[in-house]
Image 1 (cartoon, protein in one colour):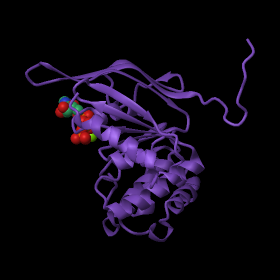
Image 2 (cartoon, protein in one colour):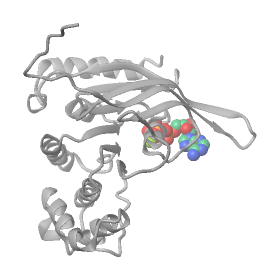
Image 3 (cartoon, protein in one colour):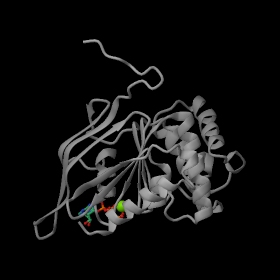
Image 4 (cartoon, protein in one colour):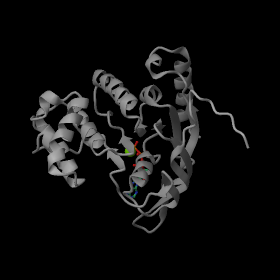
Length: 262
Ligand SMILES: Nc1ncnc2c1ncn2[C@@H]1O[C@H](COP(=O)(O)OP(=O)(O)OP(=O)(O)O)[C@@H](O)[C@H]1O
Ligand SMILES: [Mg+2]
Protein backbone atom coordinates (compact mmCIF):
# COMPACT_ATOMS: atom_id res chain seq x y z
CA UNK A 1 0.00 0.00 0.00
CA UNK A 2 1.22 3.46 -0.89
CA UNK A 3 2.01 5.62 2.11
CA UNK A 4 2.47 9.36 2.21
CA UNK A 5 5.54 10.49 4.02
CA UNK A 6 6.12 13.87 5.54
CA UNK A 7 9.55 14.72 4.15
CA UNK A 8 10.38 17.34 6.76
CA UNK A 9 9.91 15.01 9.74
CA UNK A 10 10.63 11.38 8.92
CA UNK A 11 8.79 8.87 11.12
CA UNK A 12 10.87 8.13 14.19
CA UNK A 13 11.28 4.56 15.28
CA UNK A 14 10.54 3.19 18.71
CA UNK A 15 13.87 2.76 20.42
CA UNK A 16 13.03 1.62 23.93
CA UNK A 17 9.91 -0.39 24.51
CA UNK A 18 8.49 -1.53 27.83
CA UNK A 19 5.66 -4.03 27.56
CA UNK A 20 3.57 -4.92 30.60
CA UNK A 21 6.56 -4.49 32.88
CA UNK A 22 6.02 -5.34 36.52
CA UNK A 23 8.25 -5.59 39.56
CA UNK A 24 7.70 -7.04 43.00
CA UNK A 25 10.15 -7.17 45.87
CA UNK A 26 9.96 -10.01 48.33
CA UNK A 27 10.06 -8.66 51.86
CA UNK A 28 11.72 -10.23 54.89
CA UNK A 29 8.43 -11.74 56.07
CA UNK A 30 8.25 -13.28 52.56
CA UNK A 31 5.27 -11.17 51.58
CA UNK A 32 5.64 -9.52 48.23
CA UNK A 33 5.63 -5.79 47.72
CA UNK A 34 4.35 -4.74 44.30
CA UNK A 35 6.16 -1.65 43.03
CA UNK A 36 5.39 -1.63 39.31
CA UNK A 37 2.50 -3.15 37.42
CA UNK A 38 1.55 -3.07 33.74
CA UNK A 39 4.03 -0.46 32.65
CA UNK A 40 3.87 0.25 28.93
CA UNK A 41 6.19 2.90 27.54
CA UNK A 42 7.43 3.47 24.00
CA UNK A 43 10.33 5.86 23.65
CA UNK A 44 11.48 7.14 20.28
CA UNK A 45 15.06 7.41 19.14
CA UNK A 46 16.44 10.77 20.25
CA UNK A 47 13.53 11.62 22.52
CA UNK A 48 13.87 13.11 26.01
CA UNK A 49 11.21 11.62 28.25
CA UNK A 50 10.89 12.86 31.81
CA UNK A 51 9.26 10.81 34.56
CA UNK A 52 7.59 12.48 37.52
CA UNK A 53 6.09 10.93 40.60
CA UNK A 54 5.94 11.06 44.36
CA UNK A 55 8.67 9.54 46.47
CA UNK A 56 8.39 5.76 46.55
CA UNK A 57 6.27 5.38 43.41
CA UNK A 58 8.93 3.29 41.68
CA UNK A 59 10.81 5.77 39.46
CA UNK A 60 14.28 4.54 40.41
CA UNK A 61 13.08 0.94 40.25
CA UNK A 62 11.96 1.52 36.68
CA UNK A 63 15.33 3.01 35.69
CA UNK A 64 17.15 0.18 37.47
CA UNK A 65 15.25 -2.38 35.40
CA UNK A 66 16.11 -0.56 32.17
CA UNK A 67 19.75 -0.25 33.25
CA UNK A 68 19.81 -4.02 33.76
CA UNK A 69 20.56 -3.86 37.51
CA UNK A 70 17.66 -6.22 38.29
CA UNK A 71 17.05 -9.38 36.34
CA UNK A 72 13.83 -10.56 37.89
CA UNK A 73 10.82 -8.67 36.61
CA UNK A 74 7.68 -9.34 34.63
CA UNK A 75 7.02 -8.28 31.05
CA UNK A 76 9.54 -7.24 28.48
CA UNK A 77 12.05 -4.43 28.02
CA UNK A 78 13.44 -4.09 24.50
CA UNK A 79 16.17 -1.71 23.36
CA UNK A 80 16.31 -1.51 19.61
CA UNK A 81 14.28 -4.71 19.50
CA UNK A 82 16.65 -6.67 21.75
CA UNK A 83 15.66 -7.76 25.29
CA UNK A 84 17.46 -6.03 28.15
CA UNK A 85 18.99 -8.69 30.38
CA UNK A 86 22.07 -7.28 32.02
CA UNK A 87 24.07 -4.09 32.48
CA UNK A 88 25.61 -2.72 29.30
CA UNK A 89 27.45 0.43 28.16
CA UNK A 90 24.49 0.91 25.82
CA UNK A 91 22.46 2.02 28.85
CA UNK A 92 24.31 4.30 31.24
CA UNK A 93 22.84 5.57 34.49
CA UNK A 94 23.62 8.91 36.09
CA UNK A 95 22.68 9.37 39.75
CA UNK A 96 21.87 12.25 42.08
CA UNK A 97 25.17 11.68 43.85
CA UNK A 98 27.88 11.78 41.24
CA UNK A 99 29.39 8.37 42.22
CA UNK A 100 32.86 9.54 41.18
CA UNK A 101 36.14 8.38 42.69
CA UNK A 102 37.28 11.20 45.01
CA UNK A 103 40.91 10.11 44.90
CA UNK A 104 41.08 10.54 41.13
CA UNK A 105 41.06 13.72 39.05
CA UNK A 106 38.20 14.63 36.71
CA UNK A 107 40.30 13.36 33.79
CA UNK A 108 41.20 10.13 35.59
CA UNK A 109 37.54 9.44 36.42
CA UNK A 110 36.53 9.60 32.76
CA UNK A 111 39.68 7.73 31.70
CA UNK A 112 38.92 4.97 34.21
CA UNK A 113 35.42 4.45 32.79
CA UNK A 114 36.88 4.23 29.29
CA UNK A 115 39.43 1.72 30.56
CA UNK A 116 36.65 -0.41 32.06
CA UNK A 117 34.86 -0.22 28.72
CA UNK A 118 38.06 -1.59 27.15
CA UNK A 119 38.79 1.46 25.03
CA UNK A 120 42.45 1.15 23.91
CA UNK A 121 44.88 3.29 25.91
CA UNK A 122 46.00 5.36 22.92
CA UNK A 123 42.41 6.56 22.33
CA UNK A 124 41.45 7.16 25.93
CA UNK A 125 43.25 10.44 26.53
CA UNK A 126 41.78 12.09 23.45
CA UNK A 127 38.27 10.89 24.27
CA UNK A 128 38.40 11.83 27.95
CA UNK A 129 39.64 15.33 27.07
CA UNK A 130 37.02 15.68 24.37
CA UNK A 131 34.11 14.91 26.71
CA UNK A 132 35.45 17.08 29.53
CA UNK A 133 35.64 19.91 27.01
CA UNK A 134 32.05 19.26 25.92
CA UNK A 135 30.84 19.79 29.50
CA UNK A 136 33.00 22.91 29.91
CA UNK A 137 35.58 21.42 32.28
CA UNK A 138 38.81 21.52 30.24
CA UNK A 139 40.40 23.80 32.81
CA UNK A 140 39.52 21.44 35.64
CA UNK A 141 40.55 18.12 34.17
CA UNK A 142 43.44 17.81 36.64
CA UNK A 143 41.35 18.81 39.66
CA UNK A 144 40.48 16.15 42.20
CA UNK A 145 36.77 15.49 42.68
CA UNK A 146 36.77 16.93 46.22
CA UNK A 147 38.05 20.21 44.75
CA UNK A 148 35.00 20.57 42.50
CA UNK A 149 31.59 22.11 43.23
CA UNK A 150 28.43 19.98 43.14
CA UNK A 151 27.55 21.24 39.67
CA UNK A 152 31.05 20.47 38.39
CA UNK A 153 30.87 16.96 39.81
CA UNK A 154 27.65 16.34 37.92
CA UNK A 155 29.34 17.67 34.79
CA UNK A 156 32.16 15.15 35.26
CA UNK A 157 29.51 12.44 35.68
CA UNK A 158 27.86 13.56 32.48
CA UNK A 159 31.20 13.61 30.64
CA UNK A 160 31.91 10.10 31.93
CA UNK A 161 28.47 8.85 30.86
CA UNK A 162 28.69 10.42 27.40
CA UNK A 163 32.26 9.21 26.85
CA UNK A 164 30.94 5.65 26.90
CA UNK A 165 28.74 6.58 23.95
CA UNK A 166 25.58 5.01 25.39
CA UNK A 167 22.51 4.50 23.25
CA UNK A 168 20.34 5.73 26.07
CA UNK A 169 21.16 7.90 29.05
CA UNK A 170 19.23 7.09 32.23
CA UNK A 171 19.24 10.03 34.63
CA UNK A 172 17.93 9.56 38.19
CA UNK A 173 17.37 13.04 39.68
CA UNK A 174 20.84 14.12 38.55
CA UNK A 175 20.36 17.78 39.50
CA UNK A 176 18.24 17.38 42.64
CA UNK A 177 20.98 18.36 45.08
CA UNK A 178 22.02 21.52 43.22
CA UNK A 179 20.87 25.06 43.75
CA UNK A 180 18.49 26.66 41.29
CA UNK A 181 20.99 28.84 39.36
CA UNK A 182 23.30 25.90 38.73
CA UNK A 183 20.32 23.76 37.79
CA UNK A 184 19.26 26.30 35.17
CA UNK A 185 22.74 26.35 33.64
CA UNK A 186 22.83 22.58 33.56
CA UNK A 187 19.38 22.39 31.92
CA UNK A 188 20.68 24.57 29.09
CA UNK A 189 23.86 22.53 28.81
CA UNK A 190 21.96 19.26 28.75
CA UNK A 191 19.62 20.53 26.05
CA UNK A 192 22.57 21.79 23.98
CA UNK A 193 24.30 18.44 24.33
CA UNK A 194 21.11 16.72 23.32
CA UNK A 195 20.87 18.89 20.20
CA UNK A 196 24.38 17.82 19.24
CA UNK A 197 24.25 14.14 20.16
CA UNK A 198 20.52 13.32 19.78
CA UNK A 199 20.92 10.73 22.54
CA UNK A 200 17.74 9.19 23.87
CA UNK A 201 17.31 10.33 27.47
CA UNK A 202 15.05 9.03 30.21
CA UNK A 203 15.12 11.54 33.05
CA UNK A 204 13.55 10.96 36.47
CA UNK A 205 12.74 13.89 38.73
CA UNK A 206 10.54 15.17 41.55
CA UNK A 207 10.63 18.63 40.08
CA UNK A 208 7.65 19.52 37.88
CA UNK A 209 9.32 22.57 36.29
CA UNK A 210 12.39 20.53 35.42
CA UNK A 211 10.26 17.76 33.90
CA UNK A 212 8.34 20.23 31.78
CA UNK A 213 11.38 22.25 30.68
CA UNK A 214 13.39 19.25 29.53
CA UNK A 215 10.92 16.66 28.29
CA UNK A 216 9.49 16.07 24.84
CA UNK A 217 7.03 14.13 26.92
CA UNK A 218 6.29 13.96 30.65
CA UNK A 219 5.13 10.69 32.17
CA UNK A 220 3.38 10.99 35.53
CA UNK A 221 3.52 7.92 37.78
CA UNK A 222 1.30 7.14 40.74
CA UNK A 223 2.03 4.76 43.62
CA UNK A 224 -1.69 4.00 43.92
CA UNK A 225 -1.76 2.20 40.58
CA UNK A 226 1.88 1.10 40.63
CA UNK A 227 2.30 2.71 37.28
CA UNK A 228 1.63 5.43 34.79
CA UNK A 229 -1.20 7.78 35.47
CA UNK A 230 -0.88 10.10 32.51
CA UNK A 231 1.40 11.23 29.73
CA UNK A 232 1.79 14.82 28.58
CA UNK A 233 3.35 15.44 25.17
CA UNK A 234 4.91 18.91 25.14
CA UNK A 235 5.10 20.43 21.70
CA UNK A 236 6.36 23.88 22.66
CA UNK A 237 9.99 24.45 21.51
CA UNK A 238 12.33 24.04 24.46
CA UNK A 239 13.90 27.47 24.15
CA UNK A 240 10.47 29.09 24.47
CA UNK A 241 9.21 27.20 27.48
CA UNK A 242 10.45 29.51 30.20
CA UNK A 243 7.63 31.99 29.94
CA UNK A 244 5.05 30.32 27.76
CA UNK A 245 1.47 30.51 29.03
CA UNK A 246 0.48 27.03 27.87
CA UNK A 247 3.48 25.64 29.77
CA UNK A 248 2.09 27.17 32.94
CA UNK A 249 -1.19 25.44 32.12
CA UNK A 250 0.51 22.06 31.72
CA UNK A 251 2.38 22.60 35.00
CA UNK A 252 -0.93 23.27 36.75
CA UNK A 253 -2.50 20.13 35.28
CA UNK A 254 0.45 17.97 36.27
CA UNK A 255 0.46 19.46 39.77
CA UNK A 256 -3.22 18.55 40.12
CA UNK A 257 -2.45 15.04 38.83
CA UNK A 258 0.34 14.52 41.30
CA UNK A 259 -1.60 15.67 44.33
CA UNK A 260 -5.08 14.24 43.76
CA UNK A 261 -4.06 10.96 45.41
CA UNK A 262 -5.60 8.80 42.71
N1 LIG B 1 16.10 -3.32 46.50
C1 LIG B 1 14.88 -3.17 47.04
N2 LIG B 1 14.37 -4.10 47.89
C2 LIG B 1 13.14 -3.97 48.41
N3 LIG B 1 12.31 -2.95 48.16
C3 LIG B 1 12.76 -1.98 47.36
C4 LIG B 1 14.06 -2.03 46.75
N4 LIG B 1 14.22 -0.93 45.97
C5 LIG B 1 13.08 -0.24 46.10
N5 LIG B 1 12.19 -0.86 46.92
C6 LIG B 1 10.85 -0.38 47.25
O1 LIG B 1 10.20 -0.03 46.04
C7 LIG B 1 9.41 1.14 46.20
C8 LIG B 1 9.80 2.15 45.14
O2 LIG B 1 11.13 2.60 45.36
P1 LIG B 1 11.88 3.55 44.35
O3 LIG B 1 13.22 3.79 44.91
O4 LIG B 1 11.78 2.99 42.99
O5 LIG B 1 10.98 4.87 44.42
P2 LIG B 1 11.24 6.30 43.82
O6 LIG B 1 10.01 6.67 43.06
O7 LIG B 1 12.52 6.33 43.08
O8 LIG B 1 11.34 7.21 45.12
P3 LIG B 1 12.22 8.54 45.38
O9 LIG B 1 11.50 9.63 44.68
O10 LIG B 1 12.17 8.69 46.88
O11 LIG B 1 13.60 8.31 44.87
C9 LIG B 1 9.63 1.60 47.63
O12 LIG B 1 8.54 1.15 48.38
C10 LIG B 1 10.89 0.89 48.06
O13 LIG B 1 10.87 0.61 49.43
MG1 LIG C 1 14.36 7.34 43.36
